[in-house]
Length: 84
Image (cartoon, rainbow, N blue to C red; front, side):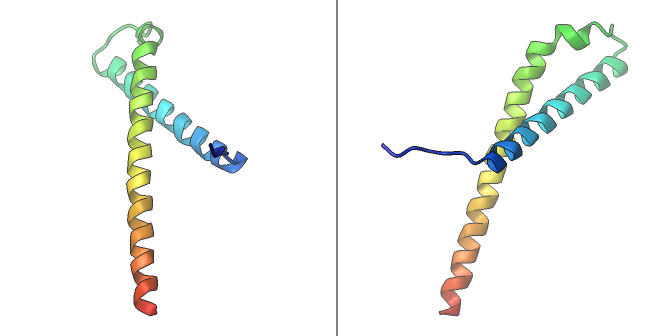
């Protein structure tokens, strides 16, 4: 079975996307607290939901980046084939 290795750069990129996803969901939570005038304790009590939504947002970014990668790869392959 072939080993799959992630480079340090790839790990940093993925951690960056995960951090951005977490910050976006936290900011949405803060907005909801302000908008609906709920107590600030919900910032901590809703952390499980924030983490679940972070995973969903991160998963969506993975899918979107994968589709973009496949599309770009397919387009580049077609362009290279036409040059021949």
